[in-house]
Image 1 (cartoon, rainbow, N blue to C red):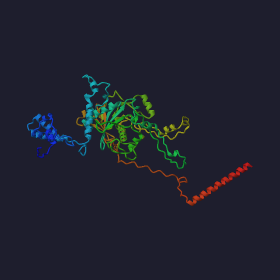
Image 2: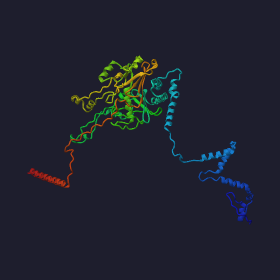
Image 3: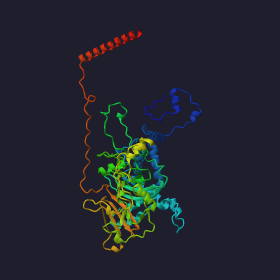
Image 4: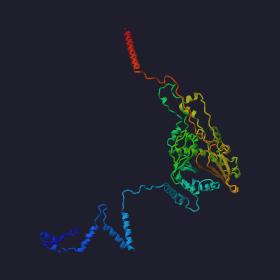
Length: 564
């Protein structure tokens, strides 16, 4: 047996079958003798290839596949500088191979408010103009007018209004007006709107409010369920429940205080609830519908002063306590501003007919007016007259009760608790004095002045070219309310841009809390006594037992006498 020097054998460095057979003394068959040994150089290449194909235990990848892919790309593309190109490819492959289960960033960047607003406004711009089906149907003919069935015809021409507001140096930027005009289309698409106009803009500490005023179509107010508690509020006419009514207590210790009867809301579609308001913080964001208003909210809003924050769900912390949150306070302020600043040239509106006027006088005043189609307008010198005899209010004022129409709580309370026969025989109680406000279409000259300043200021839009100027009215009662009158007063509009606070003639004095109620009258029912001692309790029990025994003995003697 021939001796061989010791060798370090690799994976493929294996002895041939003939060598193994000779070492073991076995016979080699003829067909096995045909096996040819691999040359040494080729064997080394095979060993190197197997080494490169060794997979990683972490990633499962091997170096052979990576080099094959890189060299194949280089040979296919044949770059000018193959060495640098190969290095760049290796770096890119390593970067692509990196994978992490979680992000390595400490803070993931979220969508900012600016990005969200930009996407929202891009949406309304895409849905407006020539992209809408209504526009294509209305203007299919080059000279055709918009169809009467087009729901967008009720939208006001805000660009025309902005043109006149620019002449008097008031209003919003034209770019902002365009965005508001396009955003108002969302309201028309979602709600049964009959009339719509841009009311104005109210500033807030953090965000502002864009306000749109609308009226629903007749018959759609009854199906309105945005305020689920309003019907209950209307039906509740001041019934008060007290714990003392259920207890059998003496009349001396029952509280004598009775709260004022609750004033119900006005019916949907009438009074202060005739208008429906929508607000948003930026044009393009979803419109939020404001709830209906209650008299208690109007009364409380008159007694407090508070800036808006821009968040509709913020609580109102004030005294007297406000019955609601910021969305209710915003609705109350809008109602107050609208009632005081909705003005028009005198003669533009008129009452319907003489019969309704007589009925209205019996009921306490008119509540509505209509446009006079024969109105010819007024000259500019009368529209800018400082006496303000050419302008009037065409919206009802708000009574101190918090309603447009007065509600008698005494008669309603009596009729609700008494039967018909009792109502006829009852004595007439002291009826409260009905509240009466300024009549409808009363001139602005009758408005109450603010200290030494008039309630309104009338002037030209330009003193340099007065022949082409327009009339302007500025409210001192509610700073930020401005009205223009153009085309002899046939075209006018009111816009409010301000903080939503009323101008006061003097400093604001917060409401002082009411005086504390008196205590119960002194008496044995409410006077505290000392607890008895154990000796006194024992004597009382003994006396009680003796009395019971005497009663039993007396009862037995009476029974014997009856038997005799």
